[in-house]
Length: 336
Image (cartoon, rainbow, N blue to C red; front, side, top):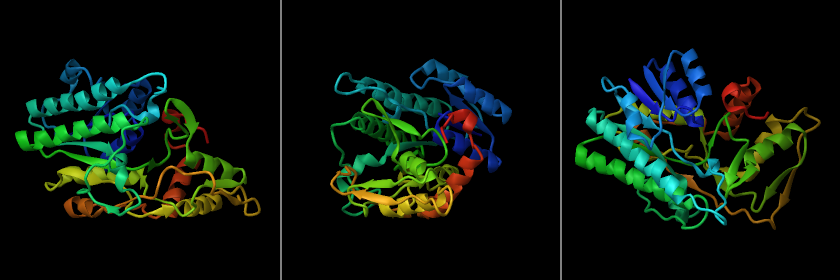
């Protein structure tokens, strides 16, 4: 049996689906009742759990648990806090760090040997654009902005996962994520407390209407993104391997330029062949995110992970198919 904590999250829903497809028994936790109805319909036990409440963990199974996937947490994209006016540092540590310790203590007491959690690709932002980044790259992050304290809280949480590996003989791991694409609640996200439409959504909306797609800054800037179905499968593979332990990059391992993204989206979402978006450029408008590329060799070696959607066009074809079929529309209420 596996427990997915944070199964009401975007990645959580896909991960539960993957484990069920693999024939696994799954128990899930979340904080939203509409997800309970979804999991009830799948015959999956749903437990309302607050990561910061030790008492809530008494609801979880204590026998025959093979591992825990920890996807619950506080993300900057969901935090409507303007740091120029307020501060939510304590919230990040309460949920992401203390919450992780509560999960680890539940596991230690019940002899559950593995937790797999997550971290941000921003913990090595200083190396972006300079090299292919491996798991051995020293942390190099920034101390300002809405991602800063999130990164601190996740680093502290993951250092604690490693502490439990060495002190208590566990086999914990954590995946380093870039932006993860897939049909879900990604139309908008909070940036320093202000709700903004995502770049991917802007590209798709414009392409769907045949409007110009505008690239800011250098069109050749490259992104190493991940697809949610690949990520979900990686969690399954990692849980099956005795070798899984520590930090893993969890990207496609393949860069795609802004130009390539725009061209592919313009082609796939064109309302008709005669109404395909024109790509225009504003090189004078700075793009604050440099290129980045991560090595996937460790995940391949330790648990045989090879992403199936590393090709961006294949990824976007599957994304569009799911979008056209209204996948998880009742859960995420996304706008098409």
